[in-house]
Structure formats: structure tokens, C-alpha cells
Image 1: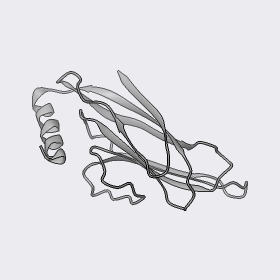
Image 2: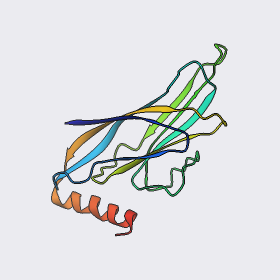
Image 3: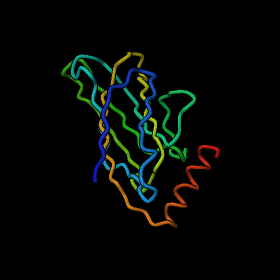
Length: 145
């Protein structure tokens, strides 16, 4: 089964994606992550949109792959003129299985306050007891439980 989430983030916003509370043997893996500006072709923008396993104390545009809570990142840029074409990069750590709520952030790094739409597809994964114990253990460490 595929779960989908979509929304619109303002610059500096963080939103919670609710996953917790499902069956004990079910986890989720991100399979698709896309972003698009709210008014394509009309603004200069450079946005960094990230998905985390835990709530962030601050929203920023830094991308650090050594952050264990980072699950995916998308960078989108565009120009109001036809001379420069949009540049988009998306990276998903698709081997990560989660069963707790996720957090998505948006930071416009060029100084313009553009909005970003996001779309996420997550594949439901049935997990054996031993595998789920590892997922829950990692989540507990990450969330300080």
C-alpha cells in the first residue's frame, strides 16, 4: 500500500507528518519526494526542503548527510526569466524504514520568501518482530526515549 502526503510550506516553516499509531508490524519507506514552487516561472527562488525523523529546533538550508535524522532532501531553484532554467535535485535515503511521525522543513536560501508545494509517497512495509525492534530502538535513541 502507498501513503501519500502533500502540502504547502512557507519559508522557515516546519510541518509534522503523522505516521505513528498504526499496526505494530508496519513501517514506511519514502519512495518519492517532489517539490514545486507555488507560482512557477514568476519568481527567483532557491529552496531547500528536508524530511526528518525528528522535530527540528530550527529550520535552515544546510544539508548534512551525517545527520542520522535526515531522510530526504530536495533543492529547487528557478528564475523569473526564460534565460535560466530551474534546477532541481532530490535525494532520498530509501533504505530507511520508519514508524514514527516525520517532520518536513522549507528554507528559501536566496532571500526571497517563496512557498514550496511538496508531494511524498511512502511505501508500507511489513516488518518482522526483530526488524521492528531495531526500527523502534533507533527511534527511541533519536527521540531520547
